Structure formats: C-alpha cells, structure tokens
Length: 324
Ligand code: AVI
Image (cartoon, rainbow, N blue to C red; front, side, top):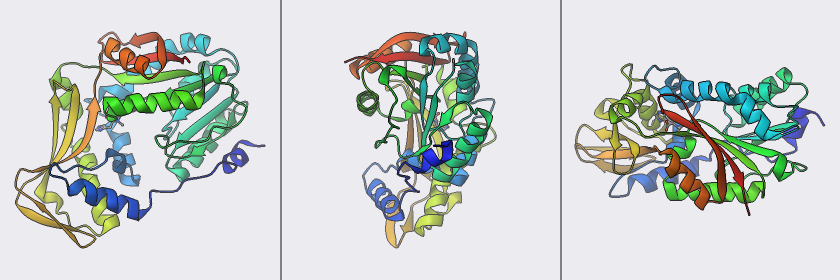
C-alpha cells in the first residue's frame, strides 16, 4: 500500500458543514457575553494570515519552538527509539515535523491528522516524496473530536506530536479532557511531545497578539469577513476593532472584537444587536508555568519525563509518557 493509497483507506472529513457553522455562530452571538469558537479562524484566508503571524517579529512562539526542536532533536530521537510512528495533531503544512523526521532513527510511519483535507493531502504527498522510507498515512479528521489510527502502531512505539502551543487555545479543564482522551486513544506507553507557551511579561504577550503591522488584527477580523462570505452576514468591518489583552489572574491572552457603535448585524437573516463597546470573545491563549503544565498533564494521565525551555524561558517543550 503506498502512502497516498493508505490515505484513502481512512474516512475523510471535509470542511465544516455550513449549518453547523451557522448554528455555532448564532449560538455564540446570542449569549449575554458574545463569543465565537476560535476553530473558525482557519479558512483559507485565516490559515494564510496565521502563517504570516508566525513570521512576525513580535510572535516569538514559532521561531522559539523551532529552535528548541532543532537544539533537542537528537535527544528526542534517543527517547523516541528506532522505528517510531509519529502522529501529528493539526499537522497543517507539516513543517516542524521535518526536524524530527531528519533526526529520528528509521521512523516507520508518519500520521498527519488535520481537518483541512486538501491541504493535508498536498502536504502529505510532498513529505512522502522527501522521505521515501517513511510510510505517510494522512488522516483527515478533527483531532479534537476523534480520529482512527492506522492499525499496527504499537503504543510504546507511538509518539504524538502537538506543537505550537495549540493546547493553550483550550480552557485548562478542556485541555485535561483532551489529553486524557488522547492518551486513551494512543494507549499505555505512548509518548507525547508537546509545545507549550510560557507565562511572561504581559507587554511581550500583548505585542505578540497585537502586532504593529496589524496582521493579528486582520486574522481576528477575518472571522467576521468569513461570516459575511459564508453565512450571508452583514458585518461592517470598519465598525469593529481588534482587542488583545492579557488576563494575569487567568494566565491567558484574550482576543476580542469590539463594536465601535450601537449596531444591528444580520446573519442569514437573523438580527444580532451590538451595543457600543460590547465585544465578541474570539480566542483564549493560555500560558503556563513549566510545573503548572506538568501538573495538568499528570491529572490527565501523562508523566512528564523531560521539559526543555529556551534561555529566555519564552516557550517550553515536554516529553511525556502515558501511564495506566
Ligand atoms: C494556534 N494558536 C496556538 C495561536 C496562539 O498563539 O494562541 C493562535 C493565534 N492567535 C493569535 N495569534 C496566534
């Protein structure tokens, strides 16, 4: 079975159906504290804007995590052992994983899991071309809801890879449930390499989520543009503003869209009223201390064997093993 024929053996999940998107949007905007799920940032425009964010001077996570992976690749390879199966959650363009594939000892299989099917298949085909000895089995699925692993991957040879501090976009209780479910799916003895952003000076955090070039603002605003495009929305983008603020007590960056006027917007014919100054809460990005994240993971059944940070303690990587 070739890499891409293997891909076809898995049930593929296409884009989110419009009716689910619509009901999530109406539900979120009908609450007293309006909110929208951050997963809807990532249509084609939003994904391109996110890629641009990752190259910004202010957005330190991507380059810091990449440097950490490069610095620790050999140590990680030693921990992973020979013939590992690498499962990447939310693999996108499969860029960072190349650092691991270059360092690992004869990796057997690479399983990128991503909801964006076309992007996934294209990235998997490129990767399979560059690593002919690795069986690449892309799985088009929402990794939060669940996905099927290819047969034959023994848990103690399996290594999940969840970079980018995407775990920070879950509330801590959801992060715990997600990590626990992942551990049950992978099985006892499975390993997890996870990237986690760290608590730091709020000014550094706020700059990372409100860059001078306005790329993050455009990324946030694209959610309204997407609703206009896909759900027959009437948002006037000039009447909303991007807000990013750090909540020290909760240890999270919050992104919001603030209404600049009293106004009524229609979405698929449904009126939604906004008071001037009212916000739509669009994203949380939780920041952890190293011991704080290790405690959370322990409660979800993962034992942390190694944690690495950069010299400035901006970002962390953790190597964990599933017990029980
Ligand atoms: C994908 N996720 C980890 C990013 C973050 O930093 O929370 C999303 C993002 N939002 C604004 N900038 C980047």
